[in-house]
Image 1 (cartoon, rainbow, N blue to C red):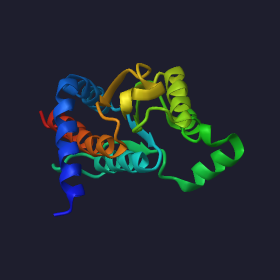
Image 2: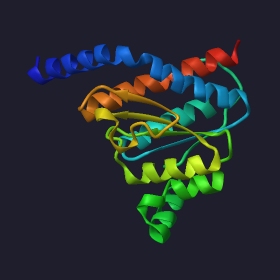
Image 3: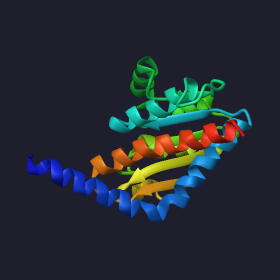
Image 4: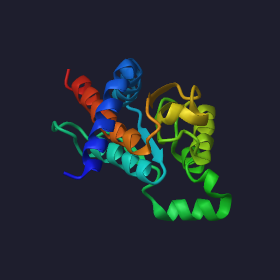
Length: 188
């Protein structure tokens, strides 16, 4: 076996163990999402690169389904529309690609979920700022100490790792946790 496989596995196991203490923060994130959806509000998700893929994953599972057949839930991945991203990026700058969409789509009581391994993406910071002015609740899933986003969202879960790979792996797990909580609450 290649030694990197064991090294990567050991790093993942360590990150999972260190995340246990922050599970109440993840629960708060999940409850905010479930509360908003049960109140008829929508979820907006955003991230860059691999975190955009995480944002897409959560949105598609809410609109489609995760495990159980249930009603479709309103969710929009803000990184999914290449025409909006390039138009806004060209006309207003990349720092505004998500903020401008929140200006158009966000309503009081909705939830914006930000995915970022570093917490330092300026376009996510701008999105959070606009969301707050519109009464959109904010959830940040970060790592590496939370970066500049730390403490700014209504709820946050900071993966206790400096490895971008470990952060994204645990964000994938957190997506499934949020979906489990949402579906459990919908069916009770």
